[in-house]
Image 1 (tube, rainbow, N blue to C red):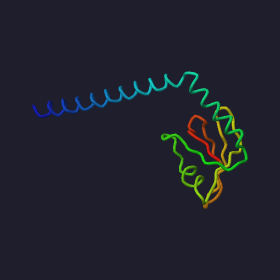
Image 2 (image 1 turned 90 degrees about the horizontal axis):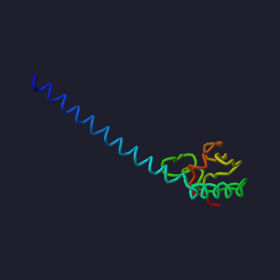
Image 3 (image 1 turned 45 degrees about the vertical axis):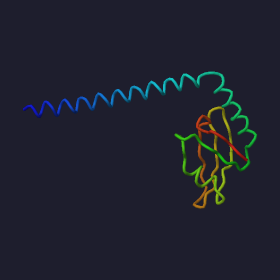
Image 4 (image 1 turned 90 degrees about the vertical axis):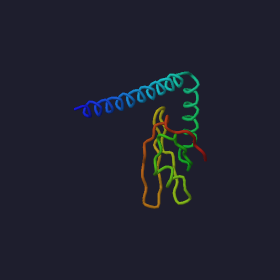
Amino acid sequence: MEYVGFIFGIFGLMAYLQVSSLKRRVDLLEEELAGTRGTQAFEKRSSLVEAARSYIGQKVRIALKEDHEDIDITMYGNSKHGSNTIVDVDGDWMLVHIETPRGNKDKLLRTASVERIEV
């Protein structure tokens, strides 16, 4: 009977450690989001949107942020065997036509997930 209490105590400790580490991660994400609400993040995004609008109809290389990776864009569209063409740009969204060796696709991307656009 003592072993059952010991096992439940260990499981309780493990659950507490997981919840506390999750709380720290949430706090760090909230701090990061609070930092991006300023005018600097908006200016960067608006300049990216303006650049994307100037590249409509052109073949470009698109670099996405690490947590928004898309294999069609990074592996196929940015290679010598395929291409990414910007079709339309809105304030929040970007329509990209991707030509791959396996076929053509149209993808809708959030401008917030785009890190860089190169010609």
